[in-house]
Image (cartoon, rainbow, N blue to C red; front, top):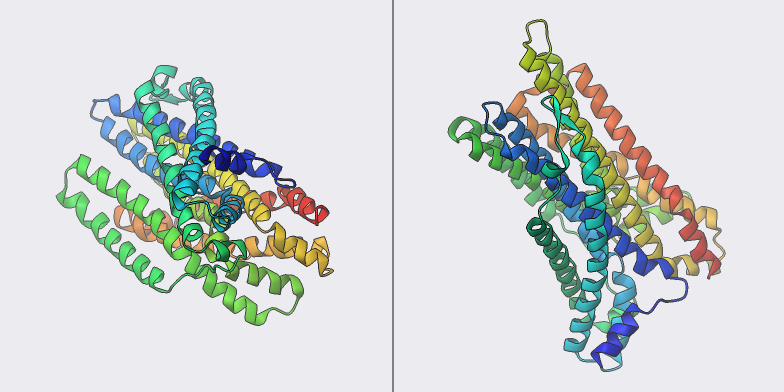
Length: 440
């Protein structure tokens, strides 16, 4: 019986050919990036000379800034086929299949999909490692052996990916088991509460205090761990408060909407603020990273002044290299996150698109509303994330470096690139929307 249920879950559905392939690709991208980021960071921890702690501190911060968004991207990959699975599972529950049978089949499906993507990600990591090993630090290349992870650590990352997929499947099953009819009729609602803003404000305030206090009372290693952890916590807090902020702004836009596409865009955001946040969450990470990139550029300008030593020039060059690598990694994650979430959203809302088509709404209007529902929250997301990052950085390096001209230009450039990536992704997923209309 359970084998039959699993076969039904994995069977392709007409008009949904990409639903099963997309999470496999997403898990592959996530695994490749996680392994490569960790592999690059580990190469710094073998150094023991007096300058090593500086490199290790910067590597730890960069690792947290990249791994936390990667975990979010992994969650998006795990949720990618949730609607297709929910509808099938709710049908099985209504037909009398036990909750235990549904649970086992669902977890097995999620693990199989994640495992296929994760194994592809290992191949991607091994293929990328020689290129990453060519990157020079301290005058010489890192080398393949310093970048590629040993088998034990690779297995640990793979286990983490599978646990994430299993946990997401179990959490997603709760509403199916409790109310299969509500899932089938799409009667469930997604809500966010203002308590999210209160939690976020409290968490950021605590983080600012700890960042200001620890460098003066804690040891170097402790300070590195605490500061890196607080930056990661701040990124997680953005994911908590983001949906509530989008809900508030969409409610205001709904009241002022005078055109069909504006009205539909606001309703799309309000229908699921969490899903809307996932569409622009990549920009939040890029904007957060922009502040660190800007302050890094300003810091290098100070370090390479007339009185700078040769070691200062070498450190500034390595910081520049690290910034470029981190920004490239962040942009790759933005592109992957936005592409995965937008493709998932189009597939998830195919029934809505069909209904709008039958009501006579043209494809162009729906596409404009879809793009507006993504691009409209971008400004609030970008500014809010940059402000949070600035509040955390000020206790460490002061406001002068953040407001320096080079810093501001760099921040604006990084945010602009992130916005362009999101905008390009909205056009790249248009064929999926057209396909939904054609099958209506």
